[in-house]
Length: 541
Image (cartoon, rainbow, N blue to C red; front, side, top):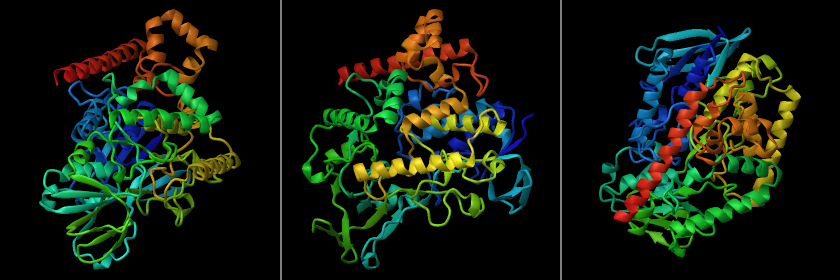
């Protein structure tokens, strides 16, 4: 037996971490403060972050799934919030995770105790306090915890309702209202879609520059299916060696896709020019577009000041009258719940909200005591532009291998040097592309190629060693010789998350080759079936 691991949080990240640790031989106890699993993916009516009933996932189900548990055939191509929560519940039942999870149990404090960790938790129903000890701890509470509240001049003069999207639950509360939404991205899209059932008009106040993308490309396939393993390896190499050229190429490709999908975007909306995708995440805008086209939702400039009880002046001098409610869709600071860990190992010490976390690889504490670094880890504070949950599953695999001692961490000096380089790269990106403060150039974003290759090596997936540079790779030639169909699907087919379970390396657990091959073939078939259905539906219109 490997030892005892505590996982804090049973949302998507906590569930996949629980599963990874169990399959690696750990005894796992997972704590969840809510009375249910699935975290923010269950639409809730309290003041905790959650999806809205109208939320649609931005990754297709063919790329979004865990590595060994595909979405169901009857799930939408882009799963709804309800389907995602059901998927997570099925995942937990299928892998028998529920006995390891204590719902309704809030972790209050985690502190070093000898060579292990003392965890204090409280049952939310009874107030009973529990104290337990663990060898390792993985904090998987997610990254969004603290709402952003930009300052609006003259807000004290306003007499309407003001709330953050974290407290938006019922569109009926806004029946026949004029609503001003502060922000124009994914959450604003969800809230606008919900308000369309009851509100009179919605204004989307934004600071300019947003690229709108479709969920489907011209041939009917889902947008994220075109990036196969071969393209991913090219992307990884270029983001390390020629990042400026790669970013220029991506901007051009995505701008072309945007213009094809949304050819008539009024200049008055102020969406062009959009910032580089290197520092600003495009919006998958299929849900918002009908509301923009119908003029129910109207993009407007930033707010200059509040003039009176229901009057708001915009940056261009226009005054909006009869504004009944203001909803902040301004996102969240990356953080962890208060009180979990002491300041010397806190990923956001002091007033560092909005800054990259004080973590090696945005995962492990930057601490001179190596025993602390190798026994405490954070999920959700490292990210790359890669679709779905699997990148976080890979991080959980890497964490487990570090905890087991199979993948060593570098020295404290080397870890500090990594962070110095990471911060320098980020500052260079800021200087080159000038992102707006609070934009979607999140402080947890890492260099794509460097991070992906580190994950592959640390988790031990074998994808790079078996498939990269195939013309000069003996392992790739061996796969081609043994199974040409599988070889072709791996490099040129759908980059299904199942591929991360294909190769045995002695680290993370691989699937049996026959089962894995069968699942890869089936996922490619399902992707092609989806394309045919899409083409057929367009012909019938």
